[in-house]
Length: 346
Ligand code: NCD
Ligand code: ZN
Image (cartoon, rainbow, N blue to C red; front, side):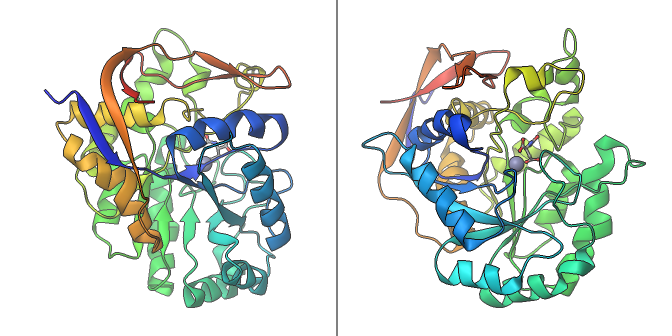
């Protein structure tokens, strides 16, 4: 049995830091685990300009604990009316690493999202030309479509057409939750990438109702049936270059989760690498962890892999159940019910 594993320093290709007091609390957790992170732009108001992204990047950097080398990679929030020139300039100036597409109404803070892909044709053309990746929240928003089918419908109704129209555009299918997404990504060329969260490798939809309704396991896209979790585990642990680590860590104050209309999002930053390592260990695939966590992501984005390493040790660990922010808000931390038996060596 392998009891320690050392890999090149990993990156997190999908993170929500929020702003203000929540940002101050969230950033250190990610910065302690990852060397870089793709930062989601779904603030209120959303990050749509180069200036806003630069200022947000500065606020994040200020929240990184002393002595930790962490680089936030910024994204722009695609709206119906965003200016293609602004995105191109942001890419040129090294501020925007990617652009995030939220279908309007799909998830937390997506009201300003895209209502119709046709409205952003010129923007997508520009992104394809300058090599700026498009990151997708891949769910349709039609309220008639069953919530568990929204990802699969997005592939049929939106993604296939999008890829046909922009074959050279780099596209990431973010936080995949279905076998449909895995199979689709596997059928595509190297312009297509896919992130997989730690929690979707651990929970299925039944877990959300285990012993009662569990608001802290509610996120979007929502966890699906066990067959889908198994497909995600197979994809992540395969070593295939198209799949890489993206936690979608998304903190919300407890009172906004434990409510009659609780919001979507799981906060996994404090436990992410431990959970991923545990999943790879269970799959007998620890030798593929480095590809998923540290190699495939930079490969897709055309960035260098990180210097330095991190070591994880098999150990029974106590995980803090909750984290408190400077404003007194409490956020629950994602942990597998069965506990965690890997820790990051200091
Ligand atoms: C995210 C959030 O809270 O910002 N929520 C979530 O359930 N994943 C938004 C998102 O990525 O969908
Ligand atoms: Zn997200």
